[in-house]
Amino acid sequence: MDDGLDALENQLKSGLQVDSSALGEHPRYSKFKNLSKAAELQAKRREDTLERQKNGRLDKIMKLRNLAFDDVTSDEDDEKCASKANSKPCNYQSSKQGKYADQLMLSEWLVDIPETLSVDWTMVMSPIGKRCLVVASRGLTTAYNKAGRQVGQFQSRLPGGNSRSKHQSYTIVDCIYSNQVYYLLDLLSWNSHDYAENPYDFRQFMLKSKLDEMPELGIPTAGFRNTFVPVPSCPCSSEQMTELMKTNISWRLDGLLFYHNSVVYEPGQSSLVGWLKPWMLPEILKVPIPKMYEMESNGQSSAQFIENYNQKHKHHSKIDRDMEED
Image 1 (cartoon, helix red, strand yellow):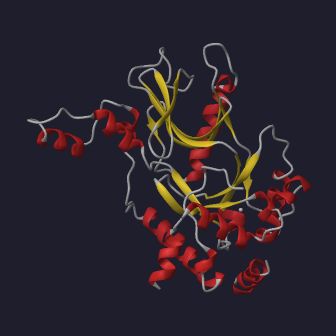
Image 2 (cartoon, rainbow, N blue to C red):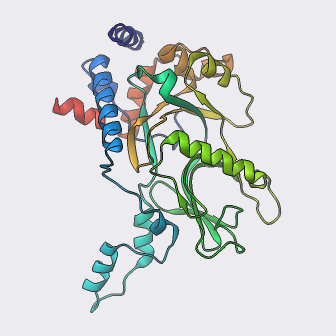
Image 3 (tube, rainbow, N blue to C red):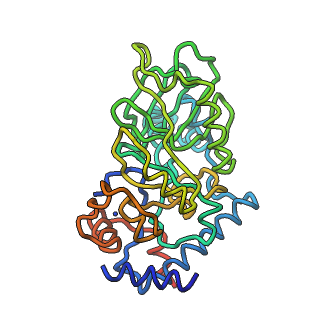
């Protein structure tokens, strides 16, 4: 493992147009004394996260039912309203926007290559588009961006998302939106059954099963113009990743997400969700890619690209803080 990290460090030193809202905050390579240390910290955080999940000590538990029904407020909201009983009425619209903010699970750059990548991780192709949380309940389907702002509302075939749905039915999914298509990344709940605390591989199994049962979700009609479709994915063996990169897709590929198969769905940046640009795969993972992706680097190394990106977007990551505190 140390030899592999040293080789990676040398490759990056000799040297991801990021459009994707699948990205969270990412480490600044300019602040790393060496990539081996950064990789060590990222690996340690993965171990800590897995242990915390195994023991059930989650820092943030998503209240899916509260997210699904707009008129349900938290205890904190109720206390705030009570304290303002003699002043202005409560602004529930503001409260709603707050509760939908920062609910998406975000990725980190894949600084450390996990030793169990080939057996415990899944690679997912991510389209260029707008990342959003889609909530179907009370006969409407509403999309919210990372900041919790409503960016779309319509009728859909998702359970709870149209006028024919049962009143208490709700569905919540994590998507990337582009041209009236919602590309499904993850499943939080379906028809009032919650899956966020299940492992990623189980959530994906259930999502595939639901889509197989409802192929009409991917077919646009006059009443349901927005469609919901899966994205290609594969286990992270070298052979399967190589084959996946040859997939004929009708949309533009932004990057690759890497999910640990045991990660539960938690809001915020996760050390168990990685991210690489397509042209980084040969350099980082020794996975060959089609020529159409090779030119996207514009001659930059991975390290230089990430440094420039983070400086431009003023990103600060958990790994940055770990490096500063060490």
